[in-house]
Picture 1 (tube, one colour):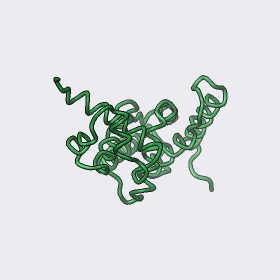
Picture 2 (cartoon, rainbow, N blue to C red):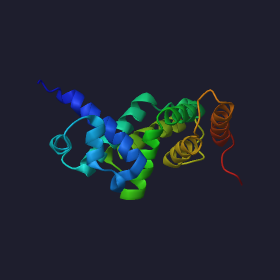
Picture 3 (cartoon, one colour):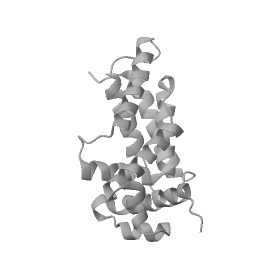
Picture 4 (cartoon, rainbow, N blue to C red):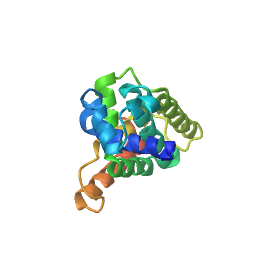
Length: 186
């Protein structure tokens, strides 16, 4: 029997994403992941080392997917917030994995990939502010945090065609638009 390492790795990551998003790191079981992936659990250790490293691989994959699927557009932060909302709505496992990461690893354990991505996105906002394309009444990293926070807070269960989901998306994009238009309350 010929083994396909890439296929095995993909199946393990997909099964692990389901398990980790449902149960977190502590609650996940490698035997369940192996069973869903259709492999011997020794393959998990062979490919990833241990359960924590498997979680890290799954988390990094979801972070990379979000960054690739939703690049920042500092000239259209409301649209960016809407696209982030759409991405999280379509990929709720990624958001659940991020919440488990925060709960089980703590706020200080932000992966380098996420730190670098946030720095790049904040730099894009800073550049737009310096060029006068975006108001500078908020620090770039703080503005990014608010935009991302609004897009995440708005994710709901439901089909993207549902009226409630569409309304929530519009509320988010409108709020970001008002935020960059009006600036801070006095």
